[in-house]
Image 1 (cartoon, helix red, strand yellow):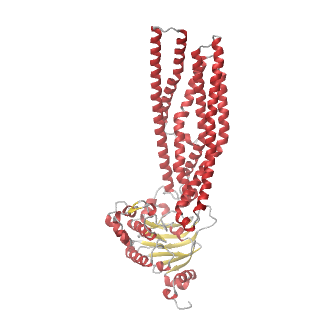
Image 2 (cartoon, rainbow, N blue to C red):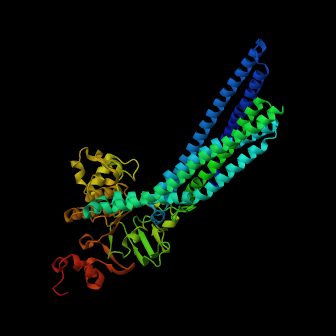
Image 3 (spheres, helix red, strand yellow):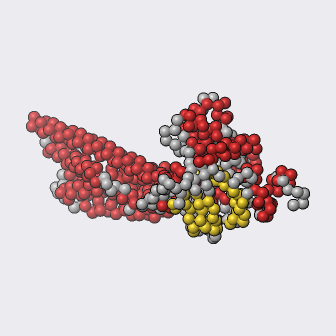
Length: 585
C-alpha cells in the first residue's frame, strides 16, 4: 500500500518505536497479574501481618515501576511516531511542490490548481495522521494482543471462547462499517477539491460578481458544494460514532460473560478471584487491540485515496525536461538568433495543431512582431521560445542549438519572457524586478525600471523598496505590466519575448517604451506579440498569423499591400490617413 511505502528509509526509527511499544505492552500487561496476586493474597490472608504488609509494599513498588516504564515507553514511542510522520509530510509537500514547478501549464491546468493545492495540504495531512496511527497504534495493537492472548492461555479456565466471540463480533461490525464508508471516503476528497475550486474562483472573480449582482447565485452554488461535502462527512462521522458505543457494548458483554462463567469456575474451585479480574483485563485488551486495528482499517481508505492522489502528481512526468547531456552554445555564435524551423504544436488530446509549419528567425538589434486575430496561436507560438512547451514538429534553436538540447536554466537565462498577465509576487518593487537575477545591484534594477517606463515607482512611498501585494493587487494593470517588463530586462536576455505586454498601457507610454526598447535592443532581439497595429508598425519584421499559419511576412507598408488579413486588422484600428492609404484602397 502507498501509505506503508512512505515508511521506507525509516527502518531504524520504526525498529526503535517497535522496541518501545514492546516494553510498553510488557509493562502494561504485567500489571493485571500482579493485581491478581495481590487480590488472591488478600483473600487468602484476611488478617494482615508483617509478612503480608512487606509483600504488598514490594508488589506496589513493582507495579509503580511498571507504570513508570509504561509512561516512558509510551511517551518515547509517541514522540518518535509524531516526528517521523511530520518529516514524511514535510518531504511529501516538498516533493509535490518540486514536481509541480516542473509541470507544463497544460499539465497544471489538467490537474487543476485547486486540486494541486488540496493534494499538497489536505491530502498530505491525511497521510501524516494515518502514519502516526500506523506507527503508534497499529504497531502497538498486535504486540498488545499477542501478549494478552499468551497471558489468557497461561491463565487457563476454559473461557477463551468468550474472547474469540468478542473478536468475531468486532470484526463483523468493522466489516460492515468498512463497506459503508469506503466509497464515501473516495468521494470526500473530490468534494474537497470542488469546494476549494469554487472558493478560488469566487475570490478571483469577486469584482465581476459584484458588477453583475451575482453574489446570491454564487452563494447558492458554493452552498450546494459545501452541503454535499457536509452530508458525506456527516455520514462518515455518524458511522464512526456508531462504532465506539458498539465496541463498548461488546467489551462490556464479554466482561459480564467472564464474570458469570468465572464465578461458576471459582465456586467449583477451578479459578481464583484474582484470575477472573486478570481475565477481564486481558479480554478487554485483546478486544481493544482488534478495535484499534479495525478503526485504522476504516480510516485507512481515505489516506490511501490521498496517497494515490499525491502519487499521481509525483508520477506525472514533466512535458519539458532537461536533456541528459545538455549542450552549450558556442561562444562564437551570434547573439539573439532564435530560429523557428517548420514548427508545429498541438496540445495533448487536442484534435488539431494550434500552430502549423511556422518558420522565422530573430536577430539582435531587430524587433520581430507577431499579429493576428484572437485564437490564431500567437501566444502559443512565443511560449515555445522560453521552452514552456516543446514543438510537436520542427525545431526551435537558439544560437544554432536546439532548445531541447540546452539546459533549461541556460535557455531561460537567455530568453526573457513577459506573459500577457504580468504576475507580481508579494514583497517589494526591488524583489520583484530582481526575481530572475542574482546579484543585481540597485543601479541595475533602476536601469531596468527606467527602460520599462516604470517612472511611477519614484512616486511610491519607499520608492524601489515600496511593498507589493500578492499578485500586484495594489498597483494598476499598466504598472504591473511595466514591472513585469522591468523584471525581464533586469536579466539582460539575448531574446526578449513580450506576449501582448503593452495591452494595458496608454499610447504615450507605449510609444516611449518602444523607443527605450529600440535603444536597448542593439544587443538583444525583441519578439513582440501585440493586438495594436500602432505597437508593431515600426517593427523590422511582422508575421501575420491566421489559424496557426503564417499568412503574411514583411514590414508594415509591404503587408498593407500584400496581406489582406493584416490590412483588415489595420483598418479596424487606424484610419486610412494614419495608415498612409489613399481613399478607397
